Amino acid sequence: MTKQHHNEEETKPAAGTTAHNTGHNAAFQTPMKMSARFQAMESVTQIIRHNQYINQEVNRVLTEEAVAEADRNLYTNLVYGSVQNYYTLDAFVRDFVDKPNRVKSWLWSLLVISAYQMYYLDNIPSYAVVDEAVRIVRKRGNQTLAKFANGVLRNFDRRYQTMDEFIATKSDPKEILALQASLPMIWVDYFVDRFGFSKAEELAQSLTQTPAITVRANNRFGDVDADKMTAYADILRAEGHDVAPSPLSPFALRITKGNPAYSSLFMNGDITIQDESALLAVEALNPQAGDTVLDACAAPGGKTVQIAEAVGRTGHVIATDIAKDKLPLIRQNVERMKVAEHVEILHQDATQLTERFGENGEEPTMFDKILVDAPCSGIGLFRRKPDTKYNKSLQDLDALSDIQVTIMNQALPLLKKGGTITYSTCTITKEENEDVVAAILAQHPELTLKSFKGWRENLDQSVHADGTIEILPQTYLSDGFFIASFEKN
Ligand SMILES: C[S@@+](CC[C@H](N)C(=O)[O-])C[C@H]1O[C@@H](n2cnc3c(N)ncnc32)[C@H](O)[C@@H]1O
Image (cartoon, rainbow, N blue to C red; front, side, top):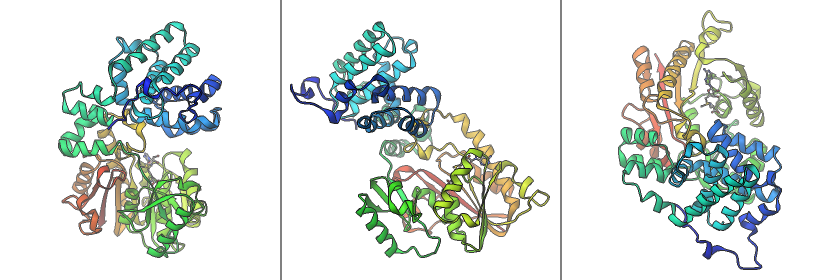
């Protein structure tokens, strides 16, 4: 599970050798503000204590703060790794500190990122981690704090050689799982209650893996076939990516090495980055050429683009979102993918859709298809957005469920008879999935729930008895996702 811990004696560089690849020598020569570890300490504090989004914080530091070129990868690794493993690292550090609440938040983050380097990274010797941490504390705090940090960090080494040794001191199987997967106990308890221990264990362990990036081919001309996908895979490989087919969609490829956002295909709008679970929601909605479609919770527009490709120039897509600041992201996406012409982007709260598009609304409109890709707890994305593991509570689930039902109730009167409405979430909670479907069916006898049994051969294991799809993150190593489609009679 965790990397073997290196002893100081084993890994100390021989006299006269350097260890540039570890970043620690570079850090010694770099002014404090620019050191990867200093910046990582500040970022982890922002993310854990002040609920900053990890991707925004890392992007901000890499663009605004002067992190030395040689330190950028180390900084990113330290932040993502420490946040991904924060639950475990935090519990580990607590084992060494008598009064954790009295430790300043930046200093706690520094202890956490130091433990991350010592127990999860291969090539950074402990003495370098300790020396650099103490140097940072001297600058950021004072000599007394530096002495405290030095004592705590040296004890890490003395007590545990690996993180597994620390976890082995526990006896409760759920606590062990929480620590192995760095998953807060509330989610371990929730998953064990919902799926049983063994499936919860698979789920939790799968959330520790690095997610693949998936790209989907632009099908605005309806010409994407196996040959085109092979040609795209060849181009991506020639540009240095490792590419594998998607187990879930013939229109998608998995990129296991390289960043496709810099590929020529991406820049040219021939592909977009979209998780393969997510793209199934639009495939389930099945928009057709000429359809008028409402995408009610659309930002940043991943599914808007996909719908717009399918309806073509004779169709029309209205993409709405409550977050005004995210609307430009939809615009950028539809423009890059060359489908902007038939997409209308509107600022709209989906809990008030009928006031705008209903019979007596400002712009009465009836839709052939509606997608409600609802705001949700996002548990299916824990792997991709590790910061979100730590700031959610079970109480949020009922509140979200209420909003989801309200949005569906607002969207339904806008659907033409014979039309389809697809409800999707990137989560795997009963409250936001099964319970919402049950509430909608109970209130709307005019709806029939569509069954996806037999729809895609290898998807059947993720289809519930009622025909809805719930993809757990471990099944295909894609995002956790839920899809239900209803037809209006
Ligand atoms: C899961 S994300 C949508 C992702 C998007 N469909 C895509 O594929 O790129 C949910 C979206 O719902 C929006 N949202 C939250 N509450 C909303 C509301 N009351 N009305 C409309 N949009 C809302 C959020 O701003 C967020 O952009």
